[in-house]
Amino acid sequence: MFRRIFFDELDPLEFIASPVLLSHYDEKALAEGELLPNRKSSKLWLLPVLVALLFVSVIAISLGFAFSRSIAISVSISGPKITSNFADPCLIEVDGKYYAFATNKFVTSRSGQVNIQIAASDDLKAWSLTGKDALPKAGEWAAGDYIWAPDVVQLDDESFVMYYSARHAVARDYHCVGGATSKNIEGPYTPLPNPLVCPLSQGGAIDPDGFKDVDGSRYLVYKVDGNSLNGHTHTENPTPLMLQAVDSKDGITFIGEPTKLLDHEETDGPLIEAPSLTRVSGKGSIGDIYVLFFSSNVFTSRYYDVSYATSIKGIKGPYTKTTKPLLRTGDGNGSLFGPGGLDIGLDGKTVVFHSGFGGTSITRGMWTGVISVD
Figure 1 (cartoon, rainbow, N blue to C red):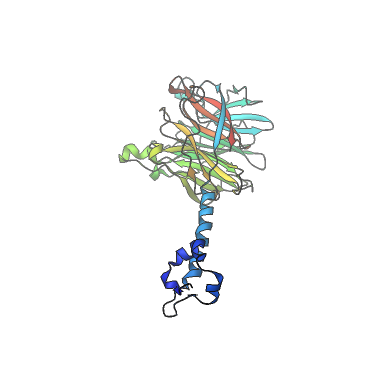
Figure 2 (figure 1 turned 45 degrees about the horizontal axis):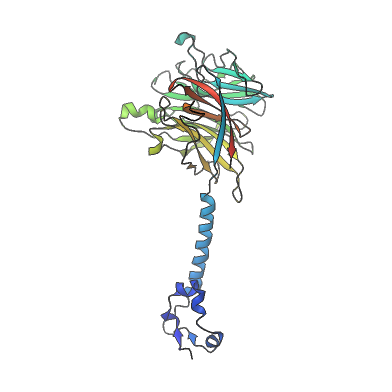
């Protein structure tokens, strides 16, 4: 005969979790009340609570596993396609032809510089410099030199907006982000009189990148150039990558306040920069994923690289960094030195980026590549 057992003698969690325990009591014993709650001090009310907690825990673990999954991105590269200085390139396709725009080039002297270089290709394989200056004059707010990292987007009315960064005319230690417009892809682009982004107290802003989402909404991503303050503050400053919604019709009217997407960590060195945003299809139960490419460390060093972070919860993040750079010194059979400034095309696959040669970043030519998502 089974002795009478009260629930007070059992650990409720053990009672739920161990079917073996219940097997010690036959149905008859249960039916005859041999397994009964202590009427003076019953813990029976804990059972449904613990069942609910266990259920929630299982769901949370499952969701946590799914949300922690991340895609793996690889890239096959080709180049160099341009062997002269063509740093911080951007890529755009117009009417079946490809164009790349890049940071200023000093021709013979600073007074003879090309502010924004242009290269063109019919097939992404053979590239040639056009010799034109897409932005002969920067905005009135700019000093007119050190014009960096352009990005060009085509609006729905088929006109073009160029985002660029230039040295401020008054606060000459810092850059700000400007805008310019043109009816033609090769320009010349007419600059806006005022900067689009100019947080001088935070070190200014550089490296703008335009992004059009699948629903037609448009955004501007840029870097707050906090490391330009480091020499003044004698401390390491934030260099966040920011997301700003813009009017989908003109690409330059801001909507709301910017959102911080990412900032540098110890493994990134003193900064992250050169953001480029895209959206790719997820795998399995995961929907579309936003991928934020960026560079870390100092562009003149061998540690400069291209990395990325992903968000499965929307364009505003949070973004999770990959643990391994996409491109770094030594890649490309040892030919790359300090690769960076990657920009991805609207197809979500084709990329351009710059890299040094022969163990130095004195000359940063342009390479192309195609990414794969696993």
